[in-house]
Structures are given as C-alpha cells and as structure tokens.
View 1 (tube, one colour):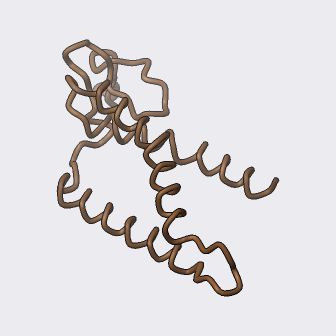
View 2 (tube, helix red, strand yellow):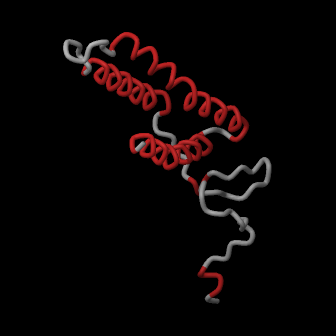
View 3 (spheres, one colour):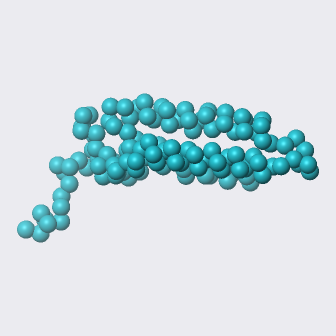
Length: 130
C-alpha cells in the first residue's frame, strides 16, 4: 500500500509541472498537439518501455539473477533521454511571465496562480505614487 501511495503522491506533484512546462515551451499554434504528445508519453510509452526492459533484464530467479542490470538499463535510458532533450531543445527560454497567448487574447499565466488581470488592468507601484 505504501509504495503505491508514494507513487500516486509523486505523480500528483510532478504531472502538473510537466504539463505546465510543456504548455509554456510550445509555440501557441501547437500547444494542444504538444499537450497530447506529452500525455501520450506519460501514459503509455513509459509503461511500454518498462515492459520491454523487464522482459530482457528482469531475472526470473532473484538468487542467481542480476537485478542490477534492470536498474542500470533504466538509468542509461534516462540519461540518454535527458541528453537528447537538452540537445534538441537547447534550453527553452520561455518563462511563465512570457507565456502570453496573444492570438486568443488570454492573459499571462504562471500555470498555477489565477490569471484574473490582464496587462491593461495591471497597476505598477510607480504609477500609484504620483
């Protein structure tokens, strides 16, 4: 019970961050496609990968098998994925404050706080002190 609860808590904390980053990093015209691809990879590709790695590296007998090969294969694939990600994206520079979708007139959002004010409604402190 406890391992499943920890995995559930981890997914609750990680998945919204991944969705937010995917939304911010994608250009406005392909944001829905980027979200769909992100959800596809989160939901099915990771399970297919685990099933494949388990088939080839998970021992049938824990006494004579080498379970560490299973973990090494996961670490190597994760490192290859991170390196590919950094090579392909070259660190996107969009920040939540720059994530304004001007085509549809939506206000800037920081993927968590409520975006209730637009740029025209925002009052700077220097303007109120005059």
